Length: 433
DNA sequence: AAAAAAC
Image 1 (cartoon, rainbow, N blue to C red):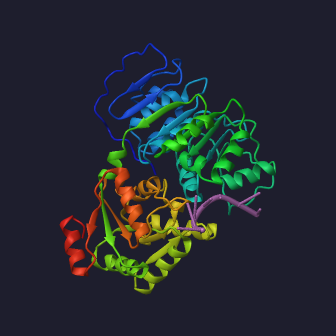
Image 2 (image 1 turned 45 degrees about the vertical axis):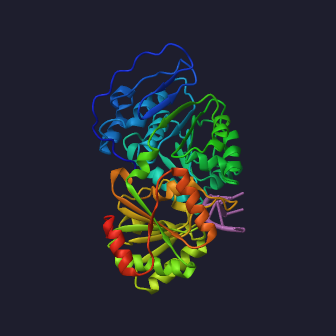
Image 3 (image 1 turned 180 degrees about the vertical axis):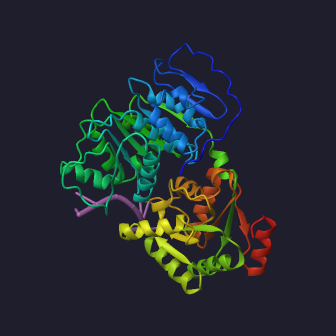
């Protein structure tokens, strides 16, 4: 669930800009307008946005008080007519989901029983989370949503719901079988867009789906990260787009204490991991592995040691994945061992520790700082305290650890691993116990 | 050399 925007001090009124293209910068939000016709407005209240009454009711029903930083600048651009494309960068928890959700809801005609908006995410779990936000926000609109993910029943006739939220495989499949009519789609959203367009496989799929969108549709790309390599491609994917960036990168890791622990072997990593859970009082935590098998193995080992641990990865059946994540969200399980499947976007507020059992690497085995940021961002959300612990054990993982530390320019603290008392004592000094 | 993503 996205952060509820908090009451903030009064904003300074914007100076009217004259010369296109407009580049306007302030402390936290940076806006690049594609052309000067776009409104350079700031919406300090949801009423300012001209949202329909039934949508407003849903917004306030979710205890949203006023637009968040990114929403107050992005929404006037997203909602303006004629629609313009947007590339937006902001951490999850800053109101990004609500921003594109409001755009989709606003552009739907509920009396037309055909898909009018399509939102894609990189994994089932995130698509479900987005659908829940859209359903809640659109509760009073009569707008219906449809989950287009693997593992769901295959539709036998054309879907007549208004907003399709899903993952690329099923969406493509539905297009092929003519159960997803794209003719009336006016908004096309990619969440975790850098991942959606860059990733081998996902990128091709997203582009194929993109080509099925009507030429007039509004393309919206949102992510917490946009590495330089994918920026140019994003601009081809969403041509002539306005760009908006929330400068919160430092903030996002600021609340998270980052440690690493020097291990001798994979076995030693497992030993240290279980020791941590015996030594520390941890609320809820997530352990990330690079392989599904490792996730299962870690869960098995820790379970054998008497910890309540479950694993979640893409090889599991959809129903099982749903059950595992629900139990974790409900606090029924305290430790979730997973792969990159839930590294992005998933909001679980109670998570106060993230362990990288394996340091994140890309498909070439090179350090993947974006994934690192997304992973550790599962904790310390919305100003809460969070701890991340990286387990390092061989020259390769050392290299990755160093590269990630260099990339963020933030010291990652070494925790001694010689004996358990020392670990406990050391972490206690950093306020971790 | 992975994970994810359809049936």
